[in-house]
Length: 360
Image 1 (tube, rainbow, N blue to C red):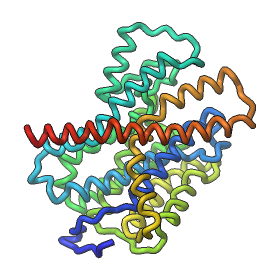
Image 2 (cartoon, rainbow, N blue to C red):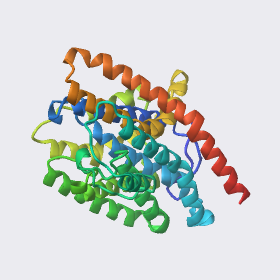
Image 3 (cartoon, helix red, strand yellow):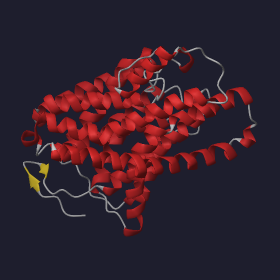
Image 4 (spheres, one colour):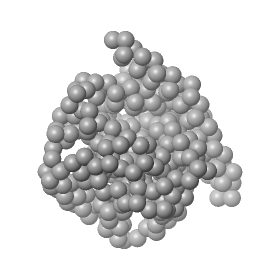
């Protein structure tokens, strides 16, 4: 990795942070495993990966760092309109695909109990899902903000963070950014203490918890970049992936409100700093590249299958011994499907849109 050159305290060279890409894939895989396991363990304190949902906070922190790194030095020249075009091309094709998979899974799920939805209501749910408009009306799906593709709740807040970045945050100085981050940290503490955890954000009743989660982590990632808090180390991908995994598998307790808050407030920003400053050995380059590439497709396409599994588990009640032979192949299938979606849908669509943008 090239040595960073400083310009006003900001990283100047544009090296690629491959370890951070790899860690993004680890976090996406943790989310998938967590979503399987939360059907098996209704009490998430008994779940071996009961804190897997915190991967979303890690995503937000990574996003703040990457957005600052990619756009801080050129936002003034490219303008808000071009920034939004870039973000839509990068993110929205998979939002659409996730919505399509959600409605197909809903209609074709062989294990689901009959639920009466009119064509008009289902169409409205689909439209809201495609355009990331929260519409938490599906009681049979716990009033998810996006009943057809539950993970879209975090994309909604990612878009909010991107809008605030374009209009406000890219102009904000480091001291003001630090003050905002501290204020957002107080919000994380309040949400965690009130709810007893940081699991919220995905449902009608916890909507604003998602705002608190993205506010702190995105700001923290942006502050790390602008402050050049890059910690040189030799932990490498394996060491940092292991440290990240520890956050997801830490035991649950009555102190979840505190431990989860501490992980989000300090541990994840530290891992981002370490990931940006670590060296990657050659044998892990392809792994990190694949892990980073597959992370977003995996995150956005897996949940239709999770509903099918959940309905199967609830109605068929398979023995515990059979679950590894269902879940492990299921995870492998979802990774393979995400790769297929990436190669044959996401990349071609983004290339096409980027070409049309250049021509227009």
